Length: 56
Image (cartoon, rainbow, N blue to C red; front, side, top):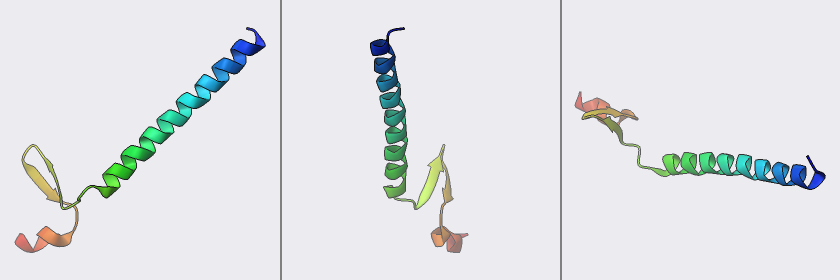
């Protein structure tokens, strides 16, 4: 490979790694900011904190 091709592939690879990292950080931040009262899946709600423990 030529030097120019190698440098281009290195830049593209680095940008791809940064994009994957940024996407993960963004999704993590969105999950952190979401209201966390209960986690409901298929009609089964599981409280994520002690707010619903008094109802049992």
